Length: 75
Image: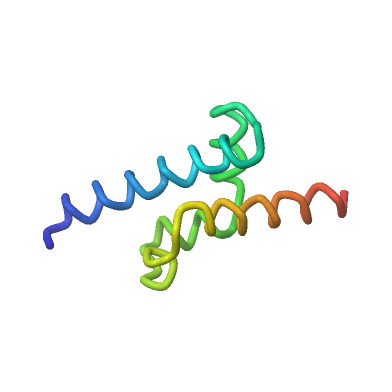
């Protein structure tokens, strides 16, 4: 797999996670995007951590949502 293919797959994964956040938690696409990119999990996905690439989009959206909830409950 060449670098362009890896980038395309990662971009698709990110888009699908954001859509899952939107659908599961009834937030706008913009809010879902903000939540995704402010998460620690997004950094790991962007780095291409292999374990995360194998997880479902909804599972990752759930992890990111829980992370978001924890951040907002501690403020």
